[in-house]
Image (cartoon, rainbow, N blue to C red; front, top):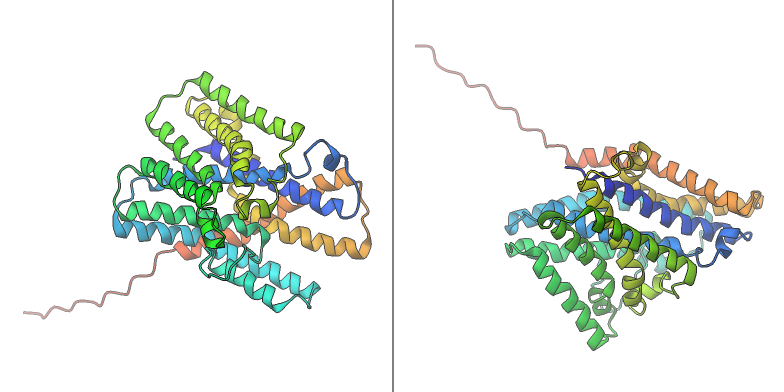
Length: 368
């Protein structure tokens, strides 16, 4: 069963991320009203927090009945085929474009970039940060850490995955808060940002086991949107900065200021759809298309904006600042949808196509 409200929220999440990077592109050349509108400039980064909560829900939804080694390996295989090949293709596209325009980029940075792109989880004691080829790839490292935690629960055949995640993830976070490790690997594995996946897990449990009244669902949506408005109006410090998350210094604040309202919106929308409210909205064709293509849009928009930056460096910036943000967003979404149809879907189909069975030799029977 496909939950359309989740697809719509994936569309919202990726549009938010595209918006923040569209402003980054524009403000390198001119000043827009949007970048000066209270604290809107970096607010779009909250889309990642919405993605994390959605992932917590989806993984619980599709794998809650997985048990044992065979199911665990099947889970990892499916996650790898769904996430990594497209990510590697998008990273190669960015690297080719980047090397074309910047042939003097340090070789060590390239090597570190591919290390973090291919391995994704920090394993080397010399590692001090996450630096994948595609900057947006940092979030996939935390996705994979959540997948690994879920895999261990599948492996040990536990029936109460939600309960154990409610114990394991906060325990890891608590260890990090108490010990305050200097080793980046420990900082990564105990990062409070993982609590945002836990929000999605809890929402799944409520979706499966509890009856949530329509009024409560509306309240959750209102609280979530109110939290978003509060952030834009009053600010959120430096929690939008990547270093604030990966270092863990701003992660807890980000969880409460961005993760919690995102989870409220996610829960409210899911429960409203379950109650049959806003049916026409959840079936919006454009929203569902952007939601389906959200991963491709997420992976390709940064490369597209880099290409635009190179063009503007040669031609000059020739559009109105605020109009350009919208134009760039529309174009980036269109490029991502094109990538979705021409690369992501064919690649997934290829990787999931069943292997052809060997021909069965004919059986000859002797005539009596």
